[in-house]
Image 1 (cartoon, rainbow, N blue to C red):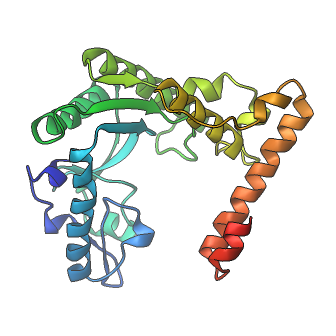
Image 2 (cartoon, helix red, strand yellow; image 1 turned 30 degrees about the horizontal axis):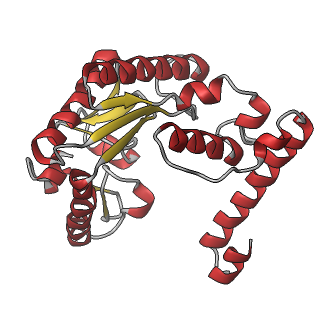
Length: 259
């Protein structure tokens, strides 16, 4: 957000070089960022412009996901994912692994809030949530179940504390909504991702809570028929997966629309 607001500039030295000579941007997902240094610099101008739109927004929604992260000590910047193994080997001491605690997360949220307050829409409102999606792996010596519970607990406490500090911040309990609902409805078959059915219910409740009129999705009509609801959840997941596969493949947009 500081880069988007022009309060600081993205350092070219933050791009990392892989073994084959190509560079990548460790501050976005790696699979879409491997290219020449000139291309990465140009792409950064587009990313800055994209995120700068948040400074014109009436509402900013922030969803917290993980408390574990990697840090570039040389640049003083947190990374979006683990550094490339070649970068780790060829730059000993440059990267460190960190686990945020409650005070760290509150500090980061307040830093974003301050940037938006200085540069954004004066009437901007914030909504902060905690993602129910668990971590799939961890970098500590703890079991992933314990590490995930610690992570979600930290984020959940920090997000509510942040909301309580500001009149223009509200906390939306998507995490609680998922964790306290029927697991057969909440989770996809991999038990890692939230089902399309539950995502729809959480978003619908979100819109209703904040005064947006939405059509009845019809799912409440069969809410007392547990088998029917579970079947509906599975069918939604199947169709959602099919749409994603079609969008990634070569099928036409007309076929996607037909689904």
